[in-house]
Length: 284
Image (tube, rainbow, N blue to C red; front, side, top):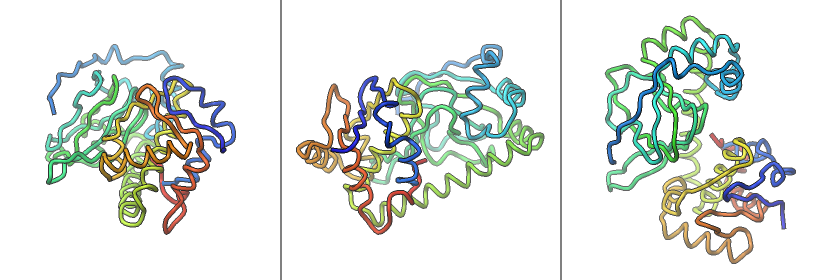
């Protein structure tokens, strides 16, 4: 048996990932009900310097900025708080704002012509949710909905552009994020076109494990089989069949509606099946 990764309530991933850490997985994978949100005043957005510095240091949009710059940019934002499974953006809504996750997780999805939901990405604290490069006249091509209670910072597009003009590092980060998003779409298309369902599902599980291992010890993966299918581009039946098979093989099991991966090496081997190695596929 290989080293174990537990995707379950409050596992200690620092121990489970002792040999295969998040960076190792990164190299291997490379890869509507309207709700009312609660607006948070700018005064309530002010954080103590240590908290601001810690949050900014992990956010790609603020990479390379000083703590003073981060505090200035964050203090100019408007904040909103959302409960679990609430809508942040609906497909077709007008743009005009740049949105950044301050806490929690959210999914970005689209509805197909058959009415099926497809989850494109899962975003966490520090990630840009949308709005980069959009003009106020454009509309969102996807929906954003929270997976757990979230806090979102927003800037008017014109205000954020002004901040970018004042900070070359912020502008460079924004361009890099848009480039990475395009690369991710290309990689996902390549996966869908060339990989078997089993490999796509294995990569989906590993991406979720890698993503949550960066949060800390208290990791909770609560995605349903249906949501896993939406992320892997397959059906609920296929997800159920594969997970049952992998359970019989001793690779994983379910516990309290969570999935526990016992043999990450075998899961990585399945993820690697295909024309190219999994390490060439972006996780983010």
